[in-house]
Structures are given as structure tokens and as C-alpha cells.
Length: 112
Image (cartoon, rainbow, N blue to C red; front, side, top):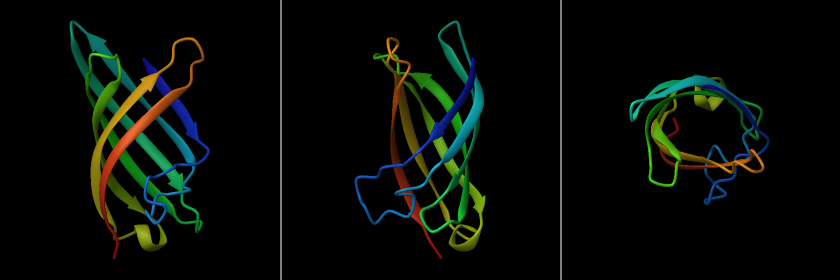
């Protein structure tokens, strides 16, 4: 399946998190076949200060609720993101009736 989404406001539990308030597109492709999940993509966000942050995500499995799960890694950016390092896990669950999804992430980000 082809995946394309746009985040209007990344909302973090910690309002001081450097990705809180970021926005931008994510895209990629995922194959689900014979119980296996594979694929990945890229997100290109602009943070609340106007700097760009790029992350790559990898789909790894589906949990019992049907959520797509996997990992992500920061791969570059501008401004304070140019030397940032980090990554984490994600779980993305789509409501089949509305098409809306909730993407829950964990993260560890080190800023310069």
C-alpha cells in the first residue's frame, strides 16, 4: 500500500520536546503479505522555529489491534536539526470508518 499523510501539528506529551508543533508530509510504501510487514518512508517536517527535520521510518509488524508498528531515525535537517541525533518507535492505527489515524511515537532526541 502507498502511504501519504500530512501532519498539521505534531503534539508531544512534553511541550518542550523539539518536535512539538512540527508539521509536514510523510510518505512511503508498505507491503503486508503472508503475515509479514515490510517497507518504509520519509517524513519532512518543519518545526515551530522554521527549521527542517527529516526522518526515515521502517514498518516492521502489525499489532493485534491492526496498528502498523515500526521504528524511525532522524537523518538530517537544517538549523539545530543539522547535528541532531535520535529515533524511536511508532504505532499507527487507522479508523476504517473515518480514515483518520493516530500515530503514537516514542523518541530519544539529542540536540546539539
